[in-house]
Amino acid sequence: MKQFLCAMSMAMAGAAAADPDPAAWDSVLKEAEGQVVYWNAWGGSTTTNDFISWVGTRVYDEFGVTLEHVKLSDTADAVGRVIAEKSSGQDEGGAVDMIWINGANFSAMKDANLLFGPFAEALPNWQFVDVEGKSVTRDFTVPTEGFESPWAMAQVVFIYDSAVLPDPPRSAKAISAWIAENPGRFTFPQPPDFLGTTFLKQMLIELVHDPDLLQQPVGDDYATVTQPLWEWLDTVTPHLWRSGRAYPKTGPLQLQLINDGEIDMAISFSPGEATAAIANAQLPDTARTFVLDGGTLGNASFVAIPYNASAKAGAMVVANFLISPEAQLRAQNPEILGYGTVLDMGALPEADRAAFDSLDLGIATLSPAELGSALPEPHPSWMTRIEADWAKTYGVGK
View (cartoon, rainbow, N blue to C red):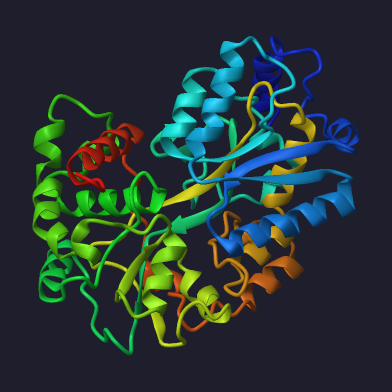
Protein backbone atom coordinates (compact mmCIF):
# COMPACT_ATOMS: atom_id res chain seq x y z
CA MET A 1 0.00 0.00 0.00
CA LYS A 2 2.89 2.40 0.88
CA GLN A 3 4.44 1.66 -2.51
CA PHE A 4 1.18 2.47 -4.27
CA LEU A 5 0.71 5.75 -2.35
CA CYS A 6 4.26 6.79 -3.17
CA ALA A 7 3.72 6.13 -6.87
CA MET A 8 0.41 7.94 -6.70
CA SER A 9 1.96 11.00 -5.07
CA MET A 10 4.59 11.14 -7.83
CA ALA A 11 1.90 10.85 -10.49
CA MET A 12 -0.05 13.68 -8.87
CA ALA A 13 2.98 15.94 -8.54
CA GLY A 14 2.35 17.61 -11.87
CA ALA A 15 -1.33 18.13 -11.22
CA ALA A 16 -2.86 21.47 -10.42
CA ALA A 17 -2.02 22.69 -6.94
CA ALA A 18 -5.70 22.75 -6.08
CA ASP A 19 -6.19 19.06 -6.80
CA PRO A 20 -7.15 17.08 -3.69
CA ASP A 21 -4.84 14.28 -2.56
CA PRO A 22 -6.87 11.04 -2.35
CA ALA A 23 -4.40 9.71 0.24
CA ALA A 24 -5.33 12.56 2.64
CA TRP A 25 -8.94 11.51 3.14
CA ASP A 26 -9.80 13.90 5.97
CA SER A 27 -8.78 16.78 3.72
CA VAL A 28 -10.83 15.31 0.88
CA LEU A 29 -13.91 15.19 3.11
CA LYS A 30 -13.38 18.79 4.24
CA GLU A 31 -12.97 20.04 0.68
CA ALA A 32 -15.94 18.02 -0.59
CA GLU A 33 -18.41 19.53 1.85
CA GLY A 34 -20.62 21.98 -0.02
CA GLN A 35 -19.50 20.84 -3.48
CA VAL A 36 -21.93 19.99 -6.29
CA VAL A 37 -20.96 16.85 -8.22
CA TYR A 38 -22.31 16.51 -11.76
CA TRP A 39 -22.38 12.77 -12.37
CA ASN A 40 -22.81 12.09 -16.08
CA ALA A 41 -24.45 8.67 -16.18
CA TRP A 42 -26.77 6.68 -18.38
CA GLY A 43 -30.33 7.83 -17.75
CA GLY A 44 -32.31 5.18 -19.61
CA SER A 45 -33.52 3.16 -16.62
CA THR A 46 -35.98 4.37 -13.99
CA THR A 47 -34.61 1.95 -11.38
CA THR A 48 -31.03 3.08 -11.98
CA ASN A 49 -32.07 6.72 -11.88
CA ASP A 50 -33.86 6.11 -8.57
CA PHE A 51 -30.74 4.44 -7.15
CA ILE A 52 -28.58 7.40 -8.15
CA SER A 53 -31.13 9.72 -6.54
CA TRP A 54 -30.83 7.69 -3.32
CA VAL A 55 -27.03 7.94 -3.50
CA GLY A 56 -27.45 11.70 -3.79
CA THR A 57 -29.59 11.81 -0.66
CA ARG A 58 -27.09 9.75 1.32
CA VAL A 59 -23.95 11.67 0.33
CA TYR A 60 -25.69 14.96 1.05
CA ASP A 61 -26.92 13.86 4.46
CA GLU A 62 -23.60 12.36 5.53
CA PHE A 63 -20.98 14.45 3.72
CA GLY A 64 -22.70 17.64 2.57
CA VAL A 65 -22.12 16.78 -1.10
CA THR A 66 -24.86 17.61 -3.59
CA LEU A 67 -25.15 15.07 -6.42
CA GLU A 68 -26.71 16.07 -9.74
CA HIS A 69 -27.45 13.26 -12.20
CA VAL A 70 -26.76 14.40 -15.77
CA LYS A 71 -28.74 11.80 -17.69
CA LEU A 72 -26.97 10.49 -20.80
CA SER A 73 -28.14 8.33 -23.68
CA ASP A 74 -24.52 7.86 -24.80
CA THR A 75 -21.44 8.11 -22.57
CA ALA A 76 -19.52 9.49 -25.54
CA ASP A 77 -21.45 12.76 -25.09
CA ALA A 78 -19.73 13.38 -21.75
CA VAL A 79 -16.36 12.32 -23.14
CA GLY A 80 -16.84 14.71 -26.05
CA ARG A 81 -17.55 17.57 -23.69
CA VAL A 82 -14.31 16.99 -21.77
CA ILE A 83 -12.40 16.81 -25.06
CA ALA A 84 -13.98 20.09 -26.17
CA GLU A 85 -13.01 21.75 -22.90
CA LYS A 86 -9.45 20.49 -23.29
CA SER A 87 -9.30 21.85 -26.83
CA SER A 88 -10.45 25.28 -25.64
CA GLY A 89 -7.88 25.34 -22.83
CA GLN A 90 -10.38 24.87 -19.99
CA ASP A 91 -8.12 22.83 -17.72
CA GLU A 92 -10.02 23.75 -14.56
CA GLY A 93 -13.68 24.18 -13.69
CA GLY A 94 -14.97 21.58 -16.12
CA ALA A 95 -18.66 20.81 -16.41
CA VAL A 96 -18.26 17.04 -15.93
CA ASP A 97 -17.26 15.88 -12.44
CA MET A 98 -17.74 12.13 -12.75
CA ILE A 99 -18.67 9.71 -15.54
CA TRP A 100 -20.17 6.22 -15.50
CA ILE A 101 -17.73 4.78 -17.99
CA ASN A 102 -16.48 1.55 -19.58
CA GLY A 103 -14.47 0.17 -22.41
CA ALA A 104 -13.64 2.34 -25.39
CA ASN A 105 -14.61 5.58 -23.66
CA PHE A 106 -12.31 4.85 -20.72
CA SER A 107 -9.49 3.76 -23.00
CA ALA A 108 -9.79 6.94 -25.07
CA MET A 109 -9.79 9.24 -22.04
CA LYS A 110 -6.91 7.40 -20.39
CA ASP A 111 -4.79 7.48 -23.55
CA ALA A 112 -5.45 11.22 -23.95
CA ASN A 113 -4.56 12.01 -20.29
CA LEU A 114 -8.07 13.31 -19.64
CA LEU A 115 -8.54 11.58 -16.28
CA PHE A 116 -7.81 12.63 -12.71
CA GLY A 117 -5.88 10.17 -10.61
CA PRO A 118 -4.89 7.61 -9.79
CA PHE A 119 -7.41 7.74 -6.94
CA ALA A 120 -9.44 4.52 -6.74
CA GLU A 121 -7.09 2.38 -4.66
CA ALA A 122 -6.70 5.17 -2.09
CA LEU A 123 -10.44 5.29 -1.35
CA PRO A 124 -11.14 4.09 2.21
CA ASN A 125 -13.70 1.52 1.07
CA TRP A 126 -11.27 0.02 -1.45
CA GLN A 127 -10.28 -2.37 1.36
CA PHE A 128 -13.56 -4.22 0.75
CA VAL A 129 -13.23 -4.55 -3.06
CA ASP A 130 -12.62 -8.05 -4.44
CA VAL A 131 -9.52 -7.40 -6.52
CA GLU A 132 -8.68 -11.10 -6.82
CA GLY A 133 -12.03 -12.65 -7.67
CA LYS A 134 -13.59 -9.97 -9.88
CA SER A 135 -12.41 -8.04 -12.93
CA VAL A 136 -12.15 -4.66 -11.23
CA THR A 137 -8.61 -3.61 -12.21
CA ARG A 138 -9.01 -4.13 -15.96
CA ASP A 139 -11.68 -2.58 -18.17
CA PHE A 140 -12.23 -4.40 -21.48
CA THR A 141 -8.61 -5.67 -21.20
CA VAL A 142 -7.25 -2.15 -20.42
CA PRO A 143 -5.56 -1.80 -16.98
CA THR A 144 -7.42 0.76 -14.88
CA GLU A 145 -4.35 1.71 -12.82
CA GLY A 146 -6.51 3.53 -10.28
CA PHE A 147 -8.04 5.96 -12.78
CA GLU A 148 -11.55 4.56 -12.35
CA SER A 149 -13.41 2.93 -9.47
CA PRO A 150 -15.80 -0.03 -9.87
CA TRP A 151 -19.30 0.11 -8.49
CA ALA A 152 -21.27 -2.80 -10.01
CA MET A 153 -20.68 -6.18 -11.59
CA ALA A 154 -22.61 -7.18 -14.66
CA GLN A 155 -23.03 -10.35 -16.68
CA VAL A 156 -25.13 -10.98 -19.76
CA VAL A 157 -28.36 -12.87 -19.18
CA PHE A 158 -31.45 -13.33 -21.32
CA ILE A 159 -34.90 -12.58 -19.94
CA TYR A 160 -37.94 -14.48 -21.17
CA ASP A 161 -41.55 -15.22 -20.23
CA SER A 162 -41.62 -18.86 -19.20
CA ALA A 163 -45.39 -19.01 -19.76
CA VAL A 164 -44.84 -18.29 -23.46
CA LEU A 165 -41.37 -19.76 -24.04
CA PRO A 166 -40.81 -22.71 -21.71
CA ASP A 167 -37.58 -23.88 -23.36
CA PRO A 168 -35.55 -20.89 -24.63
CA PRO A 169 -32.68 -21.31 -27.13
CA ARG A 170 -29.27 -21.37 -25.44
CA SER A 171 -26.69 -20.87 -28.19
CA ALA A 172 -26.13 -18.59 -31.17
CA LYS A 173 -27.08 -21.42 -33.53
CA ALA A 174 -30.21 -22.26 -31.54
CA ILE A 175 -31.22 -18.59 -31.36
CA SER A 176 -30.87 -18.30 -35.14
CA ALA A 177 -33.06 -21.36 -35.70
CA TRP A 178 -35.63 -20.15 -33.17
CA ILE A 179 -35.82 -16.70 -34.80
CA ALA A 180 -36.45 -18.30 -38.21
CA GLU A 181 -39.25 -20.41 -36.73
CA ASN A 182 -40.73 -17.47 -34.80
CA PRO A 183 -40.39 -14.39 -37.03
CA GLY A 184 -40.91 -11.03 -35.37
CA ARG A 185 -40.47 -12.37 -31.83
CA PHE A 186 -36.88 -11.26 -31.17
CA THR A 187 -34.91 -8.04 -31.32
CA PHE A 188 -32.08 -6.25 -29.53
CA PRO A 189 -31.41 -2.59 -28.69
CA GLN A 190 -30.10 -0.52 -31.54
CA PRO A 191 -26.33 -0.01 -31.43
CA PRO A 192 -24.58 2.13 -30.26
CA ASP A 193 -26.78 1.49 -27.23
CA PHE A 194 -24.43 -0.50 -25.03
CA LEU A 195 -26.80 -3.46 -24.73
CA GLY A 196 -27.19 -3.67 -28.49
CA THR A 197 -23.44 -3.67 -28.98
CA THR A 198 -23.12 -6.18 -26.13
CA PHE A 199 -25.46 -8.54 -27.98
CA LEU A 200 -23.27 -8.32 -31.08
CA LYS A 201 -20.15 -9.03 -29.01
CA GLN A 202 -21.84 -11.96 -27.27
CA MET A 203 -22.69 -13.55 -30.60
CA LEU A 204 -19.19 -12.87 -31.95
CA ILE A 205 -17.53 -14.51 -28.93
CA GLU A 206 -19.46 -17.72 -29.61
CA LEU A 207 -19.17 -17.64 -33.39
CA VAL A 208 -15.52 -16.66 -33.79
CA HIS A 209 -13.03 -19.42 -34.52
CA ASP A 210 -10.61 -18.33 -31.76
CA PRO A 211 -12.10 -16.10 -29.01
CA ASP A 212 -8.60 -15.32 -27.69
CA LEU A 213 -8.08 -13.13 -30.76
CA LEU A 214 -10.63 -10.73 -29.30
CA GLN A 215 -8.41 -10.02 -26.30
CA GLN A 216 -5.98 -8.17 -28.57
CA PRO A 217 -6.58 -4.93 -30.47
CA VAL A 218 -8.22 -5.23 -33.88
CA GLY A 219 -5.70 -6.30 -36.53
CA ASP A 220 -5.53 -6.81 -40.27
CA ASP A 221 -7.56 -10.01 -39.91
CA TYR A 222 -10.67 -8.11 -38.71
CA ALA A 223 -12.79 -9.05 -41.74
CA THR A 224 -11.93 -12.73 -41.46
CA VAL A 225 -12.46 -12.87 -37.70
CA THR A 226 -15.85 -11.13 -37.80
CA GLN A 227 -17.22 -12.81 -40.95
CA PRO A 228 -19.20 -15.45 -38.97
CA LEU A 229 -21.03 -12.66 -37.12
CA TRP A 230 -22.10 -10.89 -40.30
CA GLU A 231 -23.24 -14.20 -41.82
CA TRP A 232 -25.29 -14.87 -38.68
CA LEU A 233 -26.85 -11.42 -38.85
CA ASP A 234 -27.61 -11.78 -42.55
CA THR A 235 -29.60 -14.90 -41.68
CA VAL A 236 -31.59 -13.55 -38.72
CA THR A 237 -32.14 -9.85 -39.53
CA PRO A 238 -35.08 -10.30 -41.96
CA HIS A 239 -36.91 -12.33 -39.25
CA LEU A 240 -36.41 -9.90 -36.36
CA TRP A 241 -39.12 -7.74 -34.80
CA ARG A 242 -40.44 -5.39 -37.49
CA SER A 243 -38.30 -7.32 -39.99
CA GLY A 244 -35.14 -5.64 -38.72
CA ARG A 245 -36.31 -2.23 -39.98
CA ALA A 246 -36.61 -0.83 -36.44
CA TYR A 247 -35.01 -1.57 -33.08
CA PRO A 248 -35.81 -0.55 -29.51
CA LYS A 249 -33.58 2.30 -28.44
CA THR A 250 -32.80 0.97 -24.95
CA GLY A 251 -32.84 -2.16 -22.81
CA PRO A 252 -35.92 -1.12 -20.79
CA LEU A 253 -37.88 -0.78 -24.05
CA GLN A 254 -37.14 -4.47 -24.74
CA LEU A 255 -38.80 -5.35 -21.44
CA GLN A 256 -41.80 -3.27 -22.42
CA LEU A 257 -42.05 -5.27 -25.65
CA ILE A 258 -42.05 -8.51 -23.64
CA ASN A 259 -44.70 -7.12 -21.30
CA ASP A 260 -46.79 -6.05 -24.30
CA GLY A 261 -46.51 -9.52 -25.82
CA GLU A 262 -44.59 -8.37 -28.91
CA ILE A 263 -41.35 -10.31 -28.33
CA ASP A 264 -40.43 -13.33 -26.24
CA MET A 265 -36.96 -12.63 -24.85
CA ALA A 266 -34.48 -9.82 -24.27
CA ILE A 267 -30.81 -9.35 -23.46
CA SER A 268 -29.83 -7.81 -20.13
CA PHE A 269 -26.54 -6.99 -18.42
CA SER A 270 -28.05 -7.30 -14.94
CA PRO A 271 -28.71 -10.81 -13.57
CA GLY A 272 -31.30 -9.35 -11.21
CA GLU A 273 -33.12 -7.14 -13.69
CA ALA A 274 -35.98 -9.57 -14.32
CA THR A 275 -36.71 -9.87 -10.60
CA ALA A 276 -36.58 -6.08 -10.22
CA ALA A 277 -38.90 -5.68 -13.22
CA ILE A 278 -41.39 -8.12 -11.72
CA ALA A 279 -41.31 -6.19 -8.44
CA ASN A 280 -41.95 -2.96 -10.35
CA ALA A 281 -44.80 -4.48 -12.45
CA GLN A 282 -42.71 -4.09 -15.62
CA LEU A 283 -42.76 -7.82 -16.37
CA PRO A 284 -45.19 -10.65 -15.60
CA ASP A 285 -44.35 -12.86 -12.61
CA THR A 286 -43.63 -15.70 -15.04
CA ALA A 287 -40.52 -13.89 -16.32
CA ARG A 288 -37.30 -15.82 -15.83
CA THR A 289 -33.60 -15.58 -16.74
CA PHE A 290 -31.13 -17.88 -18.52
CA VAL A 291 -27.55 -17.85 -19.81
CA LEU A 292 -26.14 -19.47 -22.91
CA ASP A 293 -24.59 -22.91 -22.68
CA GLY A 294 -21.17 -21.56 -23.70
CA GLY A 295 -21.25 -18.81 -21.10
CA THR A 296 -21.88 -15.07 -21.29
CA LEU A 297 -19.60 -12.09 -21.08
CA GLY A 298 -19.33 -9.91 -18.01
CA ASN A 299 -17.63 -6.77 -16.75
CA ALA A 300 -17.62 -4.16 -14.04
CA SER A 301 -19.23 -0.74 -14.22
CA PHE A 302 -16.83 2.05 -13.27
CA VAL A 303 -16.81 5.74 -12.44
CA ALA A 304 -14.00 8.06 -13.50
CA ILE A 305 -13.21 11.70 -12.78
CA PRO A 306 -12.10 14.03 -15.61
CA TYR A 307 -8.77 15.80 -15.21
CA ASN A 308 -10.47 19.22 -15.13
CA ALA A 309 -13.47 18.38 -12.95
CA SER A 310 -14.73 21.18 -10.74
CA ALA A 311 -15.54 18.93 -7.78
CA LYS A 312 -12.83 16.27 -7.63
CA ALA A 313 -13.08 15.86 -3.86
CA GLY A 314 -16.86 15.51 -3.98
CA ALA A 315 -16.60 13.03 -6.84
CA MET A 316 -14.19 10.88 -4.81
CA VAL A 317 -16.60 10.95 -1.88
CA VAL A 318 -19.39 9.69 -4.17
CA ALA A 319 -17.11 7.01 -5.68
CA ASN A 320 -16.14 5.86 -2.18
CA PHE A 321 -19.77 5.70 -1.07
CA LEU A 322 -20.66 3.62 -4.14
CA ILE A 323 -18.30 0.85 -2.93
CA SER A 324 -19.52 1.00 0.67
CA PRO A 325 -21.29 -2.13 1.99
CA GLU A 326 -24.44 -0.04 2.41
CA ALA A 327 -24.60 1.08 -1.22
CA GLN A 328 -23.50 -2.29 -2.59
CA LEU A 329 -26.17 -4.13 -0.59
CA ARG A 330 -28.87 -1.81 -1.86
CA ALA A 331 -27.66 -2.15 -5.46
CA GLN A 332 -27.73 -5.96 -5.22
CA ASN A 333 -31.27 -6.01 -3.85
CA PRO A 334 -33.33 -7.26 -6.83
CA GLU A 335 -36.22 -5.02 -5.86
CA ILE A 336 -33.90 -2.02 -6.24
CA LEU A 337 -31.38 -2.84 -9.01
CA GLY A 338 -30.21 -6.45 -8.84
CA TYR A 339 -26.60 -5.57 -9.74
CA GLY A 340 -23.75 -7.85 -8.76
CA THR A 341 -21.48 -6.59 -6.00
CA VAL A 342 -17.81 -5.67 -6.44
CA LEU A 343 -17.07 -6.50 -2.81
CA ASP A 344 -15.22 -9.42 -1.25
CA MET A 345 -17.54 -11.00 1.30
CA GLY A 346 -14.54 -12.25 3.28
CA ALA A 347 -13.28 -8.70 3.76
CA LEU A 348 -16.53 -7.34 5.19
CA PRO A 349 -17.39 -6.85 8.86
CA GLU A 350 -19.56 -9.69 10.15
CA ALA A 351 -22.78 -7.66 10.25
CA ASP A 352 -22.40 -6.54 6.62
CA ARG A 353 -21.55 -10.05 5.47
CA ALA A 354 -24.65 -11.38 7.24
CA ALA A 355 -26.80 -8.76 5.49
CA PHE A 356 -25.56 -9.93 2.08
CA ASP A 357 -26.02 -13.58 3.04
CA SER A 358 -29.64 -12.96 4.03
CA LEU A 359 -30.55 -11.02 0.88
CA ASP A 360 -33.24 -12.80 -1.15
CA LEU A 361 -32.10 -12.53 -4.77
CA GLY A 362 -35.58 -13.26 -6.07
CA ILE A 363 -37.43 -15.82 -8.13
CA ALA A 364 -36.07 -14.73 -11.52
CA THR A 365 -32.42 -14.27 -10.50
CA LEU A 366 -29.88 -16.98 -11.25
CA SER A 367 -27.57 -18.09 -8.47
CA PRO A 368 -23.81 -17.53 -8.94
CA ALA A 369 -23.46 -21.24 -9.75
CA GLU A 370 -26.16 -21.00 -12.42
CA LEU A 371 -24.56 -17.89 -13.91
CA GLY A 372 -21.15 -19.51 -14.16
CA SER A 373 -17.89 -17.65 -14.69
CA ALA A 374 -18.20 -14.59 -16.89
CA LEU A 375 -16.46 -14.55 -20.26
CA PRO A 376 -13.95 -11.70 -20.71
CA GLU A 377 -14.86 -8.59 -22.67
CA PRO A 378 -13.09 -8.10 -26.01
CA HIS A 379 -10.58 -5.28 -26.43
CA PRO A 380 -12.55 -2.01 -26.91
CA SER A 381 -11.32 -1.62 -30.50
CA TRP A 382 -13.57 -4.53 -31.52
CA MET A 383 -16.64 -2.77 -30.15
CA THR A 384 -15.83 0.42 -32.06
CA ARG A 385 -15.41 -1.36 -35.40
CA ILE A 386 -18.41 -3.66 -34.96
CA GLU A 387 -20.72 -0.77 -34.04
CA ALA A 388 -19.68 1.21 -37.10
CA ASP A 389 -19.99 -1.74 -39.48
CA TRP A 390 -23.36 -2.80 -38.09
CA ALA A 391 -24.69 0.74 -38.60
CA LYS A 392 -23.50 0.79 -42.22
CA THR A 393 -25.02 -2.57 -43.10
CA TYR A 394 -28.02 -3.12 -40.83
CA GLY A 395 -28.79 0.27 -39.29
CA VAL A 396 -32.28 1.68 -39.60
CA GLY A 397 -32.86 3.08 -43.07
CA LYS A 398 -30.17 0.92 -44.69
